[in-house]
Image (cartoon, rainbow, N blue to C red):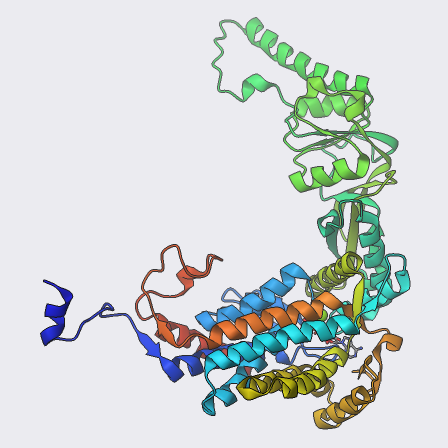
Length: 562
Ligand code: ADP
Ligand code: MG
């Protein structure tokens, strides 16, 4: 039977019975509503005076945070368009580590402004085109506005580090913490660039945030394997092993036939002898400390203690890497092969107690290309939130050192963007002009929200900001503490250029993608295609859209409770 024959007498059914479909303006407005809802959920956290959110999961775990991406990750968002906005925050987090709330709020506002134009029958394709043009222009404007920073300008780097912490739990101690963050990033920087993985962040509950410290070296969250081992070693040669200090035969289930007690004793003696030889070999090459990624046999522990060697077992692989980097040692897979050259060196290795936890500190390393930041705080929730702020802060310092370009904060770049984009729109004309103007209006959401969250009158603040910028005072922004419009650079509120360019870029991409959708089909199982982040299965098969909207309803309820 051909298709034409079938079409002759009954409608052609393409979709299965239980699939759902929403098309045209309905689809657009449904997606826009979902996207806006996500932005709305984080909007009140923006800026130094932003509020925090308490997120509670089914089993009662509580997270208190001000961090946009954390909020969105913890919220159980199901709607596919809403998830596209969440991805904006995730991209921002991966690329720069800060500016997640900003990016999401801009994306939401781009959708809101688009909605007005769609109602005026401006086609989504024109909107998409205009938004893209505006974003390209925005990038130029931001780049023109940027100020150069050098790697040696520690003071400015500290301001950048501190700006990323404002409004977060870390704020009270931001002077101490920003000094530590900048020092940490500067220390791990090498010819290959900056890998902030070499800055390990350890948290310890107890004490105050201001008591946080930077250890140039590595802290391993373990203790000495045997009580008779020394607590510390000075000028220590460090052996790094990723193999067990055990006798190999016991690993493969060998069967030993013992016929008399002497034989058993002989066998045990033999094992002991081998372990003793291993330890002797470590002693001979000069090891004072042994970090072992695997287990250490009881007998070997005993011999090591006897030789006065400090040993740690089951160290994490990531710690082994850091230890190698810090001490200049090499991780060895066979104890018999280890030589003097494989050993690393540390001026001090010591077991210490922080916040009631025992850890091994490996310090005074020649070239500390690996550091540990110990964050302290009164309670677990406090240290967790400080840790998130520090991650943002490490990110912005890294990005600044990489790019060497920063912008004043406090809504200064956004105000400038909105102004210049409006001028630019006039030169474009046509229907795109309306889209570019809408984009400019959307960007204003950042200074407006900063003012609102600081309890200021947003209209007054915007008027003042615009008037300064019209007079050519580009670095003028809103000081959220005093409510004054001042030179943000002089005020020490500075952020990397990339935070803003990335936020505008990914917000635009997501908004355009959502706007261009005019047909939503709940497609059963999407195989191979769809979003590639493994979230595909969150879209329920069959009545997918219904379930999705239910999810948004749940989110709305959550928003109300916050
Ligand atoms: P995000 O997740 O986008 O980084 P934040 O809550 O960290 O959100 O807020 C960032 C915004 O707060 C930026 O626009 C930044 O310029 C602004 N900001 C930071 N410190 C100040 C300040 N002292 N006064 C005014 N705005 C500030
Ligand atoms: Mg921030």
